Image (cartoon, rainbow, N blue to C red; front, top):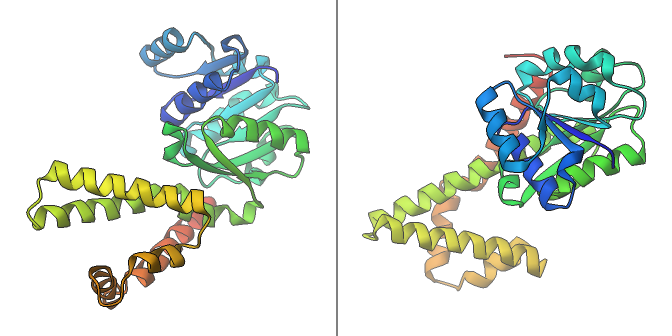
Length: 268
């Protein structure tokens, strides 16, 4: 397993840190870097891990997890590149930055794994996709899987699919929250207290997601089971179809994927 260094202890960095510790990794085998001294001190005290500078952490680490903002990534990689050695696994969690781009700055032959996670990792229900760079072995991919599976599920995909992953699962929680907001608002319009509408909607969402996962039944079949002929659900779904909600979701997700491709090509 060796030493894992997490560069950037923001929300996602802390999520990975806490997940690894819950999964059984020894705090002595984890180091973090964090520019905010006050936050670094708080995390060190909370999790009992060491806080180091970027260069010192890179020198010590077997697995380097880069969790800084995309605009800060190249500066970090330039700073640590001379301390990345053969056998290290470099895991990048910066949206829109390709393995090819990182490999062009890191030493020749560096093993880079690109990850697209989502915010549900904060409650150990994340959905992450990982893609291998040119020099990754099975061992490097397995190490990335170990890291991400500490806070959710992990899929291996070719890097060409990551724009779609970004649009579906990366941005996906926001789409769900958007629908939840609308359903809660409808409950308020119908006279329910907001807290009651919220509880009804959140539990309904949780129950529906659990049915999908645990039954393995196609969503169309599950939807039809709720849709009695001439009933309330059919009346609601007809209105959604009238407003082309399904088509709107497809075009919205296509737009997210297109934006992901723009960011990867350096367009602002």
